[in-house]
Length: 91
Image (cartoon, rainbow, N blue to C red; front, side, top):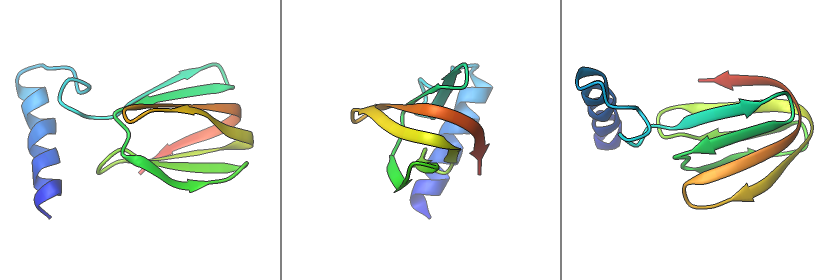
């Protein structure tokens, strides 16, 4: 519960002071065509498969669906998913 309040505060502060969300620790998702997705400020992989990868972005979940999906690279703060990306769902 405390973590959720903190993230809400970060989000609101970023909006009030017009700070980019990335600087406030919020996730950033960038797609290049249909074959590459980069995400910064992730909190880990929750599910991994060739047709679906679910990544935690704190209070935001990123569901990547497609064909031949692969986690190509991952560091503590950034990841790269490749394959044929058919949809990206934010929940």
